[in-house]
Image (tube, rainbow, N blue to C red):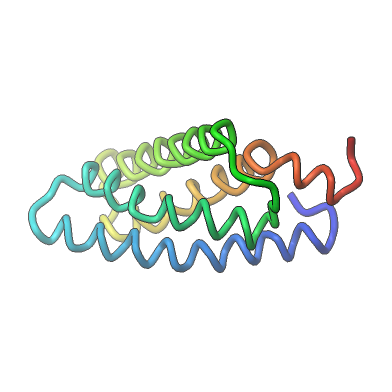
Length: 138
């Protein structure tokens, strides 16, 4: 995942942005489930709450994209986040419903799986043009 120091710094920036998004995610999830909402529906809404912020901060700060955003890039970002949501929701279901783990422990573990999918998708597919230019790849 890290082939040089820049990649490690990039991942740390991604994680920093993620902390803010996680705060929004967990707070929204907590409030919705506390209010009696379905945990899977709450997962979809809470995850979605941080997506817009994530796009702009990761695009400009984490991956340092300077060109104007385009429809394809936004579509790729939505696809990666959708895949990450599916992975985290699937893990949440398996951990909580199938294995009967505590809901919050399940949520934390499922979020970890989503983070890996999201970072790799963002780095290798969504923001890849700028990544290739920075690494001197054509």
